[in-house]
Image (cartoon, rainbow, N blue to C red):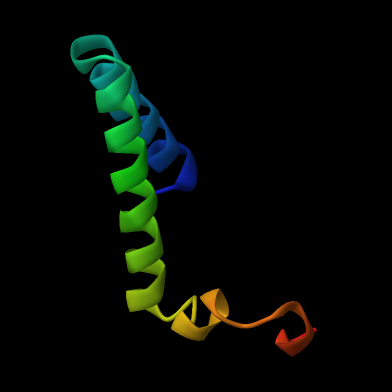
Length: 61
């Protein structure tokens, strides 16, 4: 599935949450989507858990 389709589905989900549930539901769906994205990247191996805790000087260049 292309990234454009994934973005469209995410946008539609946020739109429905905002329309039917209000701004609070919009924020909840956006936050849970961000958490799901990070967990998915960690499980795929694209991101390392230590990336969140390294200081700027320790990062690879």
